[in-house]
Image (cartoon, rainbow, N blue to C red; front, side, top):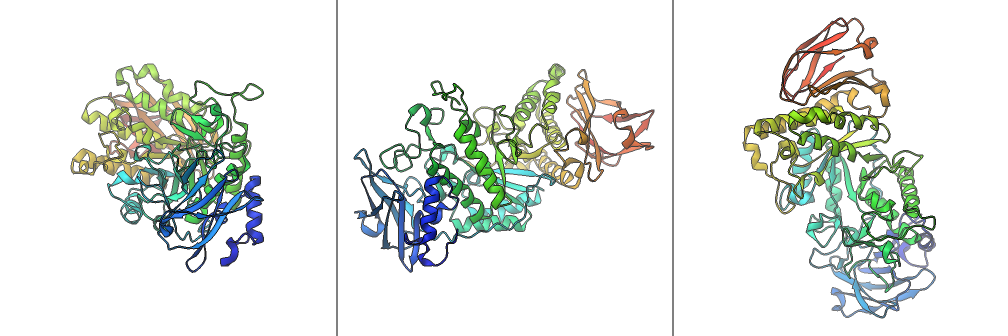
Length: 606
């Protein structure tokens, strides 16, 4: 689409007309260029909003004393528009008299900036549209990916994009993470929703700064070698009158069927993907965020709520064939992911909790990665058991390998696991103070050894004991205590060990890159396996002891990988939760003999 010059936003521009047609037909990926508020020349701006069933729409704001000015309706495209002189920073809304004859003040669905809550007005702002993707694929399959998940407002209270571009970026880079994932950064009216109930899909939240300051944050992250991922919510939206609900007096963005529209679990409304313009709205939104801010990846929230008509519902409307699948959502996600891959090097990540097949890969929904919720749930529940009883639950360690290569997975220990009474990550470890720290180190080492990319939520890296509270900063004062500082240093060392060893990068060569060496020793709760990168030949043997019991000389058969061992007589320990780097484990008669300490995870180089 060719948009150039100040006249490019006017309705007589062929580019604008084509994009509006594409919007109506579900083909638009740059609808934000023709809808919303756009500078024409100097202080003259054009305002355009899609409200095809409205009886009337008036523009109201700071610039006219909120009295309202008539907008012109263009039936061909269902849009209302007007021009007037305004200043950057002035607030505005659309006074929409709907088909139901009610007049409501609506935020601009395409506004790139809104006022800070409790207000909900849109703000006149220069978007400075440009493709800022630099072509680098920072989250590629063959690279180490260790993601630091962050809620910006509580990493440090009062933190904004400017402050985060130095403090947060420098910290994440120094700790060895390869990516920062930001929980939702678009506008939302309720702090308690953490951003997952958006009131402005295109508006970067004023809590943290301006669109330009977000770009600065991304650029600084890239300079430090970090990818930036953002959480995105195309499943549902708020019911507040200022938002998309009954936007023109009719169910415009939502379904007219309440059983399809309502999401009772969250008190929100679901997008209706059967409507072409809704698909255009969301596709354009994703590409706006990726291209205009140089984002490296989008984590799509609540994918299960999109895929299933009965997700968390008591009453629901089945399809004509009796099924519960949302076919329109499936097709939307496939096309969206294809489109993102065609236009950018960004990756698409699914937070999807069901057994829906082929979420990743071209034969299915075309996502690049999927969160492995099964691994997360099984592993954390295992660590909550007293070590005495873990021998009865060895399957929680071994079963996730049965499906480890069925999708391209990210292994998350996310914000959802440290709230609502679940305890912090270290708080979920069974045992006393020392045992909890030992097991948190073991947990992280085990997760780094397991196939899949890695994600952990802020605060877990230094063992914060309190559950995450979005109203407060992380408990950085904990670093004044020796065990917490040591935990942070371990997390840093683990990140760099992961990055430096290609045997742990190749997560998708299936069993060619993974071999069990010990999986049935339930009595001692010990497992061992070999990780190998077929391209580089780099190989590691990992061993984990999930009890406090020690084993002076534990034997592991190397017969499954004897060709890789060759005539070696010993293997060096290259990483351990117990600081045993440099020690040698002898090989005798095809067996590797090594000391195994309580709650230890260790890696030996082949």
